[in-house]
Length: 113
Length: 113
Image (cartoon, rainbow over all chains, first blue to last red; front, side, top):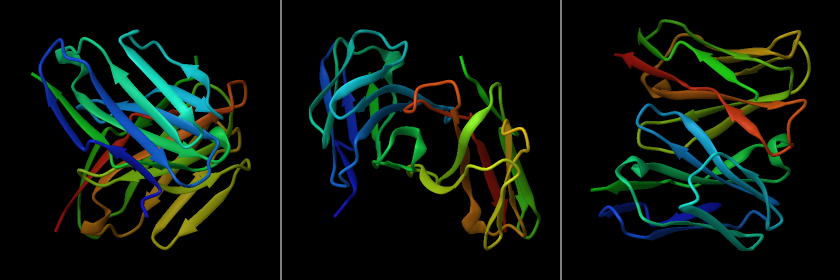
């Protein structure tokens, strides 16, 4: 069983479209994250949830909206996609925030054309 | 806000040479974690350091946490082609939210056989 799974793995879409990325963890962790990794490999935190509550909301365009229906799921919805949104998006989870190791999903490579 | 700087950004070595990446934080850290990301893969946790001056070893990898808990290093002895990837440090600031793990920019290591 994959600990943190996200779908889809690849996403190619046109500018202006709306898309969602789903993430699920089966580790029983309390904290979940979304990270964006650009072409230079920089990993930037976008959102963090703890027990379904939004804890961290970095300076991210409000076209990005996370949703956590339960502790095991954290989805990312993106409206009106732009070329600059092209990146790899990683979901991750940890038992106790930054105090414990983070487990990353396989990543979703989003390409906006 | 807290910043974590990592150098060098790129490192090319011949197989058998040693490699070191350095991480510096603008603020005192509660802990520091290290991750490895293979090309095309996702970040995978290597280790966590918590105590001032702590040194931990994993086979050919040696991790250090500075006395002031503001810097850290990862040293690989006698690199192998399997060491190829990007190495990230990630720090949890003492004054920041427990969920805010800040990643360094990463060091991309290539090993020539």
